[in-house]
Image 1 (tube, one colour):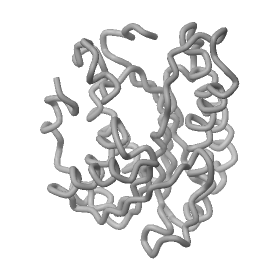
Image 2: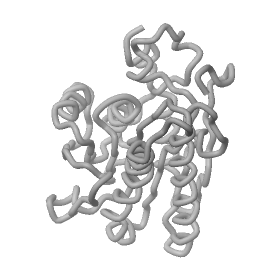
Image 3: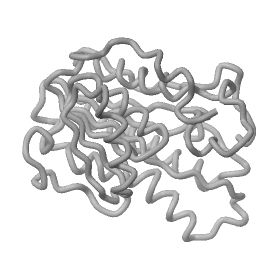
Image 4: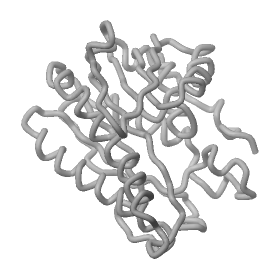
Length: 252
């Protein structure tokens, strides 16, 4: 089955639901981040799509444009290294009100065989891309009446994994960061949502013989994030777990 899966056409009408909002989506060049970008492009929000790969970002924009109700800007930038300078952009992209952190990297390797460099890479991508995204735009979020931070961590943020411990460690660190950030921003208030995501069908599974029906539909993830983004300011979804309905599949 090609990616995205055959459910991709079964999407509700969402035009106008986030009119006037500007949303930053990190990790938008492929996989789940690309699906989320495609979903939000139909919502009338302005989108800033961020990832390292310029060519793949252009592909994402091209996929968004046929149905887009949005203004779309792309930025090739490595958030694992540095925050973004908002002054790089004109309005509305310089002052977004919603951040969606998706970027991540999975290492399938035992702790015994993981090198220091591999540990560092996992923490750089899985923790610091989110940290630097928030650092980039938190001053802007504080100026908006309706604002929100939504981050995909992983079900691995809540359990230990014997075959991918560095990945689980980095996701535990991300969850600790998000929980602390949530408490820090309670008085603003800026709701912070952590999504503990189980195994989801994406490009990383495309070359395997895994039945996509055993994995989470990525469009369901996009719809869930869109629903959270549309909540009223006084409501926060603090943490949410999304899992395959039949339970986890190997490797886990």
